[in-house]
Length: 266
Image 1 (cartoon, helix red, strand yellow):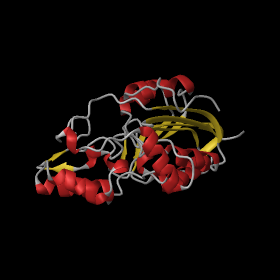
Image 2: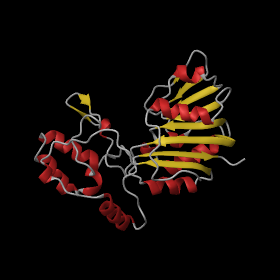
Image 3: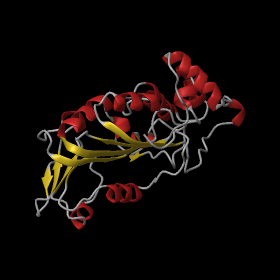
């Protein structure tokens, strides 16, 4: 295993993530299963793939005119592909929404011996903004976490429900405050896994670990609409100790982006 949970050198754009993947896998004539379906048809065909399966339960089934790009409307946990049928599994910004252990079991099944799984995901639940706010719709539009910074830093890890409800009620319209509170405490949008949970799932997958790299880098400013005196002063050290106690095992706080590269044994 290479890489470090403290490393900050991860690619953050989807184009840069794909470029890193393409530098590791010879895509000419390859069969690839993509979990999440974010790569454009033109990109896959420019690299000469034999077939690119975009696995996404939120997209309609589709086959490109060339036949080399296909959208499979399916969950990653239930891949409808034959055993040992793909050369690589690729994913960008999807693993935080999945049952990771089930998805890795499917990846192990569909990968050919020696095949590579490349997954870049984030932010995850251990991050300062791990609530994935862009999947909340309010006032006729989808909110996005880097622009609509309505939640304070560490809202999901530092505040109990009643505390967060009181804070939001004092600064936001009632319907927005209620929606945000539901999203943080009740929504199942994200899987609420910490970094160590991904590690455990990978180690139990039967795939060999090639690389793990993680970063705590935040590439935008959180400017939530609260009086600073109303915010709780918290540190990562405090949150680490709190969640280690709650979970009964060592837990790192602050990791926002992760690259996980695994290989099916020959």
